Length: 326
Length: 295
Image 1: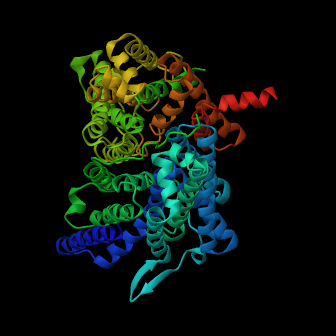
Image 2 (image 1 turned 180 degrees about the vertical axis):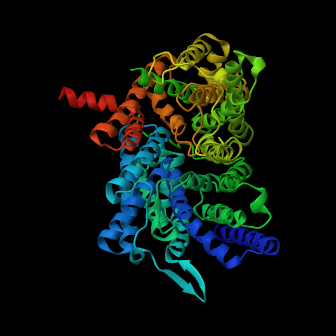
Image 3 (image 1 turned 90 degrees about the vertical axis):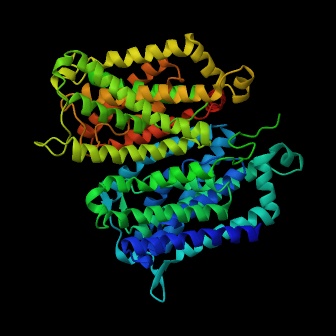
């Protein structure tokens, strides 16, 4: 399994390098800058997708990642400014995400809520809460720039800048892969999704597992959300999430609920995200293709990739169904 | 009151889109993008000088909006049926694509040369006139109610409606009953697209004073997602949706006054909308509350 994962990732890397070389030949883009942006754009997707893959394995669906991104980003920036430390801001964003994930889990387990409707409700609520909090905290509804000191410093490896959170995201994806496939906890998680009654009969608490995974998933999504203003953009705007929560879901679904696989898809969607502004300023394209169409590119790429990758995927049997002893 | 009804006019239609999806067992949240496309079609057709069309201009505009809404809904339908792409994902991606397409066309192609912040206004011949002077309530409300009633009869009285409910009660049930699952799924998306397309059209041709789309899409934004709440409150029944849309129209209208008089951010209305959706997602909530009250 591990070896197959490594082989698959090497194939992705080979394809991506081919695309990068092609781009350099065709457009004269600086590949280093492009890779740096791609990795930055990949990070929130990878974090949220790895957590959500684990979550869906346990039979829970959280389509409110978009909402968690938005709320935890504001919480993270606020705390970073109060404490004057970006890392604590990141951590706080993660904790807020974990809290939201935990509340959603409780509501869906004990309230027997339809998780898809609830997740969408969270997204809609976040659409109102984000501009409200922006105005309530910083007095300006559109945009807020956190001071330079609280932004996360990027590592510089021989001139190649990479964020420490990106490395953490890759490590977390690998760690979740190992947890899912090599440990008892992973076995229980998979059982909670495929055959909750069997897990219950074996003497384990299904609802406990189903509360742990959304909390982990929420924490990682919150981390990704706080990462965006504190590192990736360096600013927070009204609609900065721009469908990224759903693109993270696309990573999960296309990779067949594998944390490592979703890392690979996050890389592809990150590339599409990073490529859009590059294509927009390329001579020749700039004059002929409207800017707005290029901004729509990441969404079209996502839809196309999912349409190609998703055929024949098998989802856990008890996905989204609340478990109750009969 | 008239303003409230004016707000509720598009909400009833976007609510129908979501409701018919849920009745089929689909979580169709593509209404937002279909509204944009419908509004775009309304501006394109409504601002064209079709003088020979006379009073049929309104009808042509609405049919155009409905058609383009339907076409936009066809994409997730085909992706769902033939590739198994989950409709939440495809519709959200298409919402954003529609957002940027509408933004481009309304700021570059159909832009009003005199006022670059909005598109061309539709011509007199394709406008609904106001029925209560001094408000924004127009005859469009009748189109909205008529569509909801048509959907009510379609769902409760026709074969297609019965097959839709069968599919909603379980895909295996429907297969055993000999329902063509693919066909019904596509029909469900298309019916939803038509309702949202009309909603987009009405937002342009039945909402004074501009009768146009603003470049920021501010006047057509958000109705699709609010439709989810409307459909849930109306219990996915078209008659219930008409009533729920009036309630929602009241909340939206009240939000505006909250901002004027009390200085409360009208964005909170959206947050409340989300909280309503969350609370309605819990069928156990009423039982839990009932237990608490009895104690």
